[in-house]
Amino acid sequence: MIFMQNIDKIIEQLVENKNININRDELLQKAFSYPEIKQFLQKHQNELTAENLKISQSKIFEYYQQKLHGSMPGYQPKLFIENGVINIKYQPTSEKISNDQKTAAKRRLQLINIAPAYRNVDLKSIEFDEHRANALSEMANFINKYGKEPVKGLYLAGNFGVGKTYILAGLANSLTKNGKNVVFLHVPTFIAGLSSHFEDNSLQSEIEKIEKTDVLILDDIGAETLSPWSRDDVLGVILQYRMDNNLATFFSSNMSMDELQEHFAHTKNTDESVKARRLMERVHFLSKEVIVGGRNRRQNY
Ligand code: ADP
Ligand code: MG
Image 1: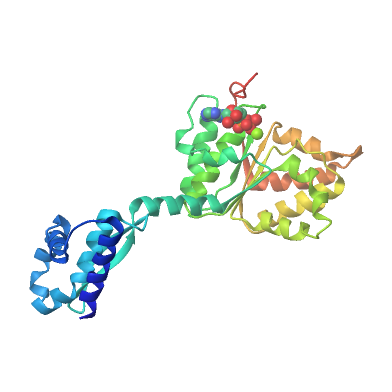
Image 2 (image 1 turned 90 degrees about the vertical axis):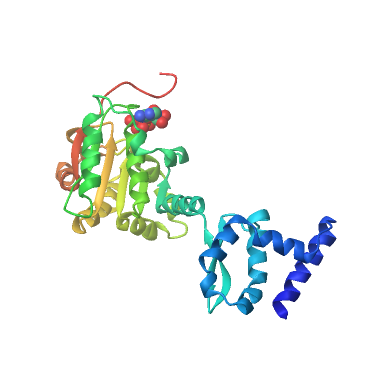
C-alpha cells in the first residue's frame, strides 16, 4: 500500500540520518500514544473504520513528526477527517497572524521624509498630561467618529519639540492598524525636494498618491520655503482635492493658523494675501486647531 511505503521511507531516512535504532512499529506506536493524537482518535473513533485508520497512518505519522520537529515556522498542523480518512491542514499560528497584521499595517503607512522611528509610536502609550490633553482627546474623538460620521482632522499648533510629530505618528499607526492608508509627509523637506521629480516626470504621480490617500498628515507646515508655484500648484492642489473629496487631513505646525496665513502671503517677497486666504480656507475646512504645549522633549535642550 502506497501510504505504508511512505512511512517506511521516512523511517528509513530518519534512521539513516540520525543513526537511531528504531523500528517502524515502535515509531507508529509512539505517534499513536502522543496525547493530541490519542485525543483526536478517541474523539473521532466512530468516524474511522479499521481500514481507513490504516490508510491514515501516514498522516498521523506526519503530524507526530511536525509536532516533534516542526519544519514550518509560523504554521501548526491540525488533524481533520476528510472522506473518512485523516488529513492534515497547516494553520498559521496566532503569533504569525498577529505578525502578518503588523507587517500589513506598516505597509499602509508611507513616510515621506519622516524618521522611520516614528513607525513605532503607539497612540495608547503616549503619556497624557495637561499640555496635550486637548490634542489627545480630540484625537480619540476623531478615531471614534472617523468612517461613521463627518469629522475634521486636526491642526496641532505648538512650539518645537513638544511632541506634535510624535502624537501624529501614534495616530497614523492606529489608523493603519484599522486598515487605512496613511501618507505622513514632512512638508519642508518635500517642498525643497520637488525639483528632484522633474527629471523623471514623477511629480504628477507623487502628488496623486498624496492627495488620494485615506489619511494625509502634513507635518511641520509653515517651516517650508514656498514659491508661488509650490504654494498654489502643489500645496493648493493637494488641499483642494482633499477638501472636494472629504478626505481626512492633519497638520502640525510651529505656527498658529493665523500665523500660517501670514506665511502663505509672503512667497519670495511678494504679498499675495488673497491667495493666502484662499489656501487657509482649505486648511480651516479640513482641520480644527488644537494647541499643544509642554516642555521641549528633544535631547540636549
Ligand atoms: P515636535 O514635532 O512638536 O517638534 P516631536 O514630536 O518631534 O516634537 O518630539 C520631540 C522629541 O520628543 C522626539 O524625539 C520625540 O520622539 C520625543 N517625544 C515626544 N513626545 C513624546 C512622548 N509622549 N513620549 C516619549 N517621547 C516623546
Ligand atoms: Mg515635528
